[in-house]
Structures are given as C-alpha cells and as structure tokens.
Image (cartoon, rainbow, N blue to C red; front, top):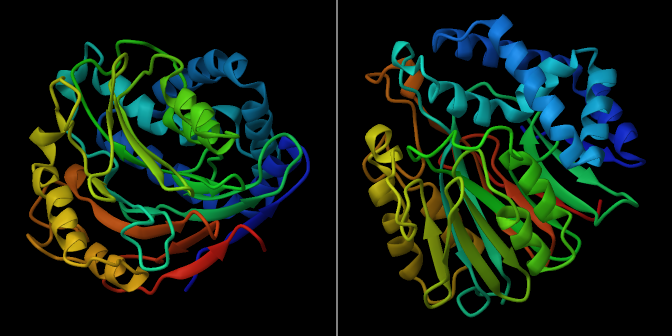
Length: 363
C-alpha cells in the first residue's frame, strides 16, 4: 500500500480546494479522531472551536497566502474554518490548553515523538545529502503526499496530515529539506498565537536559500517549542532547537547528525523526559548504528530506522499496551529525503514492516 498523492497546481485557493475535495472523507476521519482525542484529555468541542477561531483570526495576517489555501480546503471539504484550523494548529492548541490554569484536571499526553537524522555527502555512498526521521504519533491518522507546482513560490513535495497544508517533512526545488521533532518546556504557552510549526515548515519550503529557511524558524517568537532539522543539497545541515524565545544550533559531527525529543544544546528545562525518557537513548542509538558504516547508503539507513533496541520504546516505535492510552505512540511512517534527487522515500507504516516507496518532486 502506498501513500495517496495530491498533484496540486494553480493559486493557493485552487490548491486548497483540490485538497479538500479529493481528501474530504479522510479529512472528516482525522477531525473525528482528533476531537475524540481532545475529549479523552478533557477538552469539549465548543471550547476547541472557540479557541480555533481565535487562532485563525490571529494567524491570517501573518501569512494571507497560507490562509487562502486553508480557505480552499474549507470550501473543498465542506468543513468549517474552525474545524480545518483545528487540524492545522492541533499541536499548539493542545500544548497551550494543557498549560492553561485548569491544566491540573487534564490527563498527561504524548506529543509527536520522532527520531531524526542528517547524513552529509562525505558519509553517503552516492555523495547525496539525506535527512529523515520516523514520525511517531497516534495511529489511524490519515496522511498524504503533496506535490506542489506553483507561481507564488518554489515547487515542493512534502508529506502531511490530511486537512493540513504546512507539512511534516519535505524538500523544495532549491534543494532545501526539513524534518521536525517535538520538544516541551515549561515556557511553552508564553506567547499566544504565534505561527504554528506547520506554517514554519511551509516558510522553510518557501525559502530560496538557507538564510530564508533559518529565518522561517527564528524570525519570530514561538508559541511552543519545536526542533527543526534543516538541510541543503550542497551538504549543509543545521539542527535548530527552539523554545518560545530562544534557539540553539547543532551541527553535524563527521558528516552525521541525529536528534530525538529533548534539548541537547539549549539550556532550558525539558519536560519531554517526564513523558518519554526513551528520547535520551534513541538519538544516541541511531548515531551509533549509522557510524558503523563509513559509506552510508539507503539500505543501511533504513535498517537503522527499523531498529528495535528497548522495544516497544525503540527507534522503530510500537504501541505499549501497558501504558495509558493518551501516552501510546507508534512509528506511523519512516521517511528518508534525498535532497539532490528531490525525492521522498516513505514507508506506509512501521519501517520494520513496510518497504520505502519513492515520491519524486518531478512527477
């Protein structure tokens, strides 16, 4: 089974409308599943829709083109603006609402946990620059690959949750790629209604060069913490750990860089360790596996991403049925991005069970 692919062209509203029309069933499924998850955590729909409205009103002036595309998804899917906004800012909404004065009544919950890597040309067998990760999150969330050809910015290809337009991981025609990892700190929620990470991923994919890509992350304060691993085909990779108003930069060592879900350089408290202590060994384990080969190829990387050390809390993560439901995570897909080839290689599920399929930017 392969991921669905959207080939999107035209202006932003046209692209969003096509997304909404083609994926309307899957959008409704994602919305239903997220509303159920929020309800389990103690948040009712009316409160969510009211908060979603506030996000939409605050964010639209920050990037009208992005929100034109959101409007297109609304039109095409037949869902409300509040519902589509919820899908696009669900991460920030969840973190911020959990940080509210009433947070004591809510259950602790996992967020998107991932293990990421960058391999530079001096360590890759074919001289490519490669980045990737396992995307660890709750199961049954629909995702889609979007191949975008446009006049209002660089063409790009990314994978994202259906109903969202910013993307999770991707690469643009200028050879700039990005993957992300969740981070948590007590400072999250300090600044309300700043650009969510999906808008920042889009800013990176809008970039003509690395300066613009970094500015997409660091140009403003943030509502929540997040890790962005950004790389360029010419062999430059930078990992940016961010809290709401601080950043730290991590560079490859001998052509390799790995990251999971805790702060390695930024001097702030990391709350993720309280929820997923496995973050403390996943990136170290991945680095060790990658360093065993002097010339890394796709098969070596894929084998490392399927590693089961400390199963089920491993690089290739599986549900732990002994954990609370709100803390369970699994590797929904694994992705490897070839920046020179502008190609995504993605599994349909756990990398231990699924082959990688190729999705090139050039259709």
